[in-house]
Length: 176
Image 1 (tube, one colour):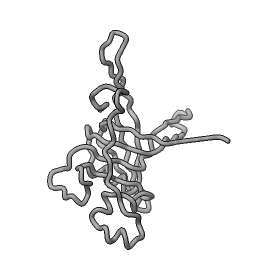
Image 2: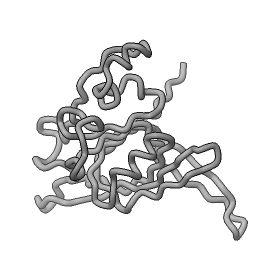
Image 3: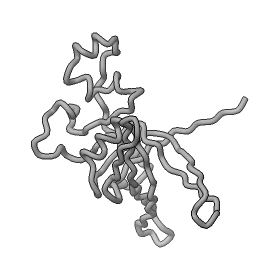
Image 4: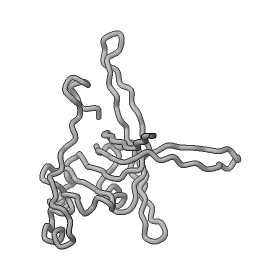
């Protein structure tokens, strides 16, 4: 029996503004990158930083919301899977890139001025679900619970904020 798991959870800050494109058949794709700061204590006893930059891609409603609410420097928590893209460049060389296909994103920053509570959960973090999880998303169902019940969706649960670290595993500060 072979076991394969392709799940990725990251939290960090956007390195650049998301690039949102409208494709044929009214599909939307958002490309962005997140910086994850891995902290550790060096041999000299001082705190060191080892940043990792993850290229990310989101589709559909998730991409629309990312383009609408996130900018360079915005903190975000993303869940998804790794995806490998391959192509041949103009010089005829084969190229490969590994990126994160974002299926769910939680906006960790404060709500933009003028936002209503309909788009956000009770803790102020906004959630952009993938189409497959949209029916169970607390942020989408909170505005119209009767509509969710009419669609046969399960009752929503409050979204929990991700914990920055487990007790004793990492430095006191969050990694972003």
